[in-house]
Length: 70
Image (cartoon, rainbow, N blue to C red; front, side, top):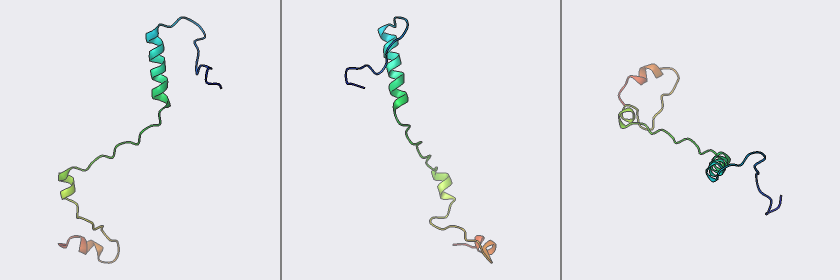
């Protein structure tokens, strides 16, 4: 493909300038890589109910330790 060769061409019909602009816009939008979805932030209310930096450990007596104050 050379630099002078068009990327696409109209095969049938006579599109208006607005129709060509819409087509080019749609092609440009579709050719961009999809952005990673934004990570949902946790609300302050939900964050306050979780212990900071500790994860529950499984094992003997874990059920008892889960109810004890930290």
